[in-house]
Image 1 (cartoon, rainbow, N blue to C red):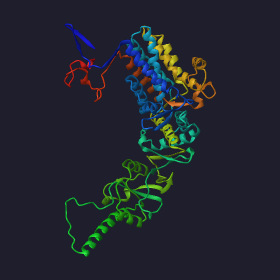
Image 2: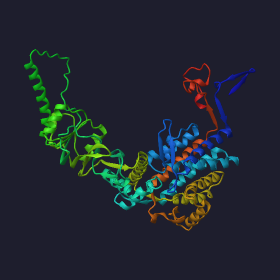
Image 3: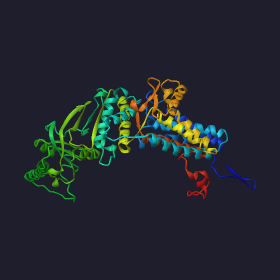
Image 4: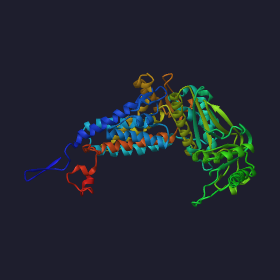
Length: 549
């Protein structure tokens, strides 16, 4: 990048910087974004395939989840990273539909490229896409049906749809039951859901069917002393977040002991103090104690003598979940512990699972925090199942919060595409072409569903369109039989937010990439790229007007 001044070239960009502009920059960006969308496209739908990702350390991840794939892929190109962002946002907002969002974004750019080739300015395409995305959101809302958290069968269908194609089909029913029951337990009064209140413990060994929901907590710790009871029924639970041991003196005190009797009395006194501390726990009526910090050896002995089941060094997050599950209060000062602070569980017991001792706190009265114990043959199987379950939990949570559903199986996309075509014809000007392109782009979803199932995408699309033109708004693709059926009746349903968020995020990122016509990449020095490298001898504060480059 050089200007000419009195015959002397002036270099603004540092040597080795690269600059791509205009049409070349656009096609570069679009190509990169399309490549990312292509990478996840084959995973879409119930018949989608999985990807195996191996990182630099040789760790293997096998997954079907768009967000996971894009997160694990080592992506360099800046425009490609934007498509990864789309999937990440989708994952954070809704937890499912990540592949859909990335694929739509890629297709929007592909269609835009065709328009740019016809000499339509990217700004016009961008404004057409914005109009289309607003209209699409309105159209989808008209397709939504409402649902409440009491419609258990509908919630099970949503969980099932989210898990389909994620390697969990064979155990879909069990996992859907677990996801729905867990979510219903932790919903608060105003229908809000906090995923942190569900703890998932994975243990290798046993079959996936043996996974279960614990109406309470699983703590990955054992009791501190073997003389303590292994099982405590009707447990009164003390949650202590201070150490059960003697505190060191604050001042640098020196104790001089001159005779053995003095030493003995000193030790006796220490013992008595610890006994008093334990006595306070016993007096409160607690039969189980979970301690966030340490428990002194002597204290362990006295707690065991009193028949109290104690666990030490429990994580802070687990302590908070225990408090929500059992209804107990976290006690900081043992002098003030009373019966009112104790939580309740029908049973606290230590069990050996997959070679490790774990503490199960079960049968809580109205737990606002629950645990899920996942089992599976190998690490990879469990990790895959956990990702599927996570998506199911998230979508059930989203539906409980929004109470709005749409049919799945590509039906909303076909419907929105048709309505957008109609809307396009009411527009004048070149935006009309962009809206039409947007409508075409949405058909990539049913087309991909068909392709991944080995069906003829053109035949399937034609059939879908004809059903929708006859007013069958919930007609979607049954990929198992290669037929168009009513998705609503088949129980293939998704949260409304999955669709609105996917289309919105895809449109926004496509518009952002389209508006770029100049890529300036500074050379990577030993310390990495920095803004000040771009101009020789430039003060670190930069140069006026540099921001607008």
